[in-house]
Image (cartoon, rainbow, N blue to C red; front, side):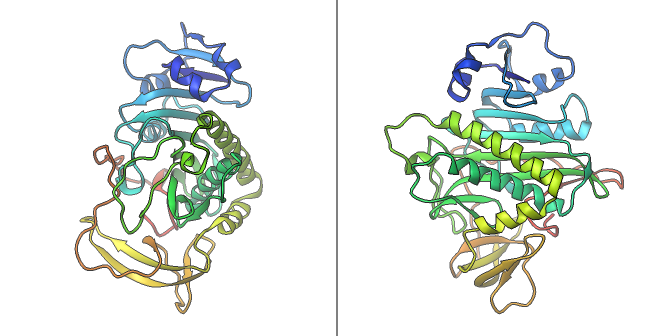
Length: 352
């Protein structure tokens, strides 16, 4: 399938040399993806394309995106217009990128900002958490391929990937469904590869790092390696989900969890960012929908924000994870109908 880019110079940093050498201007793009090209690529710069046989779906690469590509794919999926069954969009940097509930994500140059559309068009068990597990596992396994790292990445409930105590990546998942049939999925990945964003610490994310912080400082740029490994891991895990269901992915998600057997604090967060402690204790397990079980608590925890360790939070406000960029705007929710329902699936089924 083809790779499309509005910046051959940037594409050279994330694609194999043999693909970069084949990039040529697109005079007459495929009508089937023309709306996607028009939505993702901004301005009047020409689009170049090349074949990349490793992946059987279109990949769009842009050096800079003035708005969240994740949000753009969600809008196209809702409108069912000009969106291939599977596609991937990569941005080198951008504005209005965000995490769950619109928390801003510092999309700075040197890192991977990937958005992917999938169209299973079939029933998927535990789909409210299956795609979050799929995304988080794919990031962790892609990082594994780097080698030279002093430790394996772990998953912090529900959608953060950490090296030691530092967050290096986060994922998002959004699904559109009709009853139990999942029609479209949009996944978002932010991976700090070469640059560590300047982020004010919070109880939830006390430390941020990039993979470069754990690699030799004078080593080669690893963006191309992480990009390819992430696409390979995602493709492999997606096939597993379609063939074997969510159970194998959820099992591996639990095995990669960095909070099993550790003391944690779980908080609720109101719209005004005020926090209230739900419970504290040692994590003893996860349920089928990634509900959290704590030692001494009979009922599972089905939502909230997690802090490593026991803490005391005084009443007041904590800022959401700030970055060098302004607070992002979430995609506005459309009214759900019995035929099509859209949901952000970054946690257990009760998280809405």
